[in-house]
Image (cartoon, rainbow over all chains, first blue to last red; front, side, top):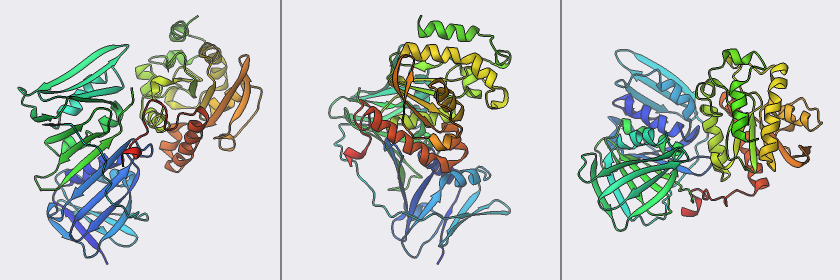
Length: 250
Length: 203
């Protein structure tokens, strides 16, 4: 039995694979006739986790008869997708032992990759009662990181009911990127109480890759707790990439 | 004598031909009172351009491995046996290692770490030789704990693979991760370091 899914444009798949590959080399995806495609991967240091949900309506074609898990070498898949242009249509076909990647743009290119043993998973939930949330233009976070990297390797994120701040401090000095309610880049902000925590900058940087395919990013925060960072995808309810990042105890 | 002073000397050094091709010398960086020092082999392209150790892909992997055992880069000191980039990232030559070694020796004396982690074959064999032991194969000694007499007192020396080797050959990565887990147990940081315990307690 072959399960088959088709992405209208490779750009989404490229960004997803890039996002997963930056955290883990290999991961399992789930294909389910009702739920669509799902992925969950925890990085080896258990510092960061990525979850992906793409409902079946996200795909232009979704032919899955039976729920199954497939282990994928994302490092190899990422290399293949570098040879595929963003606007090309991409089809993924899963047989028992291999995945066939076909890119279509006037002519067809096909790559066949061996599948790894798929590890069944249930989506984990992080038990944090978040106290602050902000919706931002997604490119704000990668730009803030570029600014703060000049100063330090950790970033403090602060949210209150008026603003979001990204801060870094080291013996090189201090840097603050502040986005207030008056700024167009802050779409919405809510805080039951002002919240702040410190996170590793290089991990957070990896978590900005979906900004290429999502216009908005949701930050959820609680003092001294993991960060939740979500990117809605394609305007389709339930479709999105969610990251969790462990805080640093400082 | 301070680490800054040694760094200045390294930047001005002309003891071997590598000074001619370097962009910047890479003295090392980190906590001057670190309990753990990581010693790599020689700077690569990114390190040569920035004058900082382990800043490229191998550096990112090293940072992740450190975090996995509850350490941040600024908790440790990171340096190399050879402080200037060998052209084309070739292995450092014995005469280059000999010319540069006094800098490393002085850095280690000054920092006075309890644990030295040798990243890669050249670093491991050089540090073991300093401790009076001759070894040849990194695969034979990686992950082993050596109690060695170095600079006037007993220290722990742990050789492991260079992170770049695990990037080049992903099959080596589990070995590197295994060695770091062992390191975490030795230094007692795993899960209790001020860096947090990762996400697990929150599931």
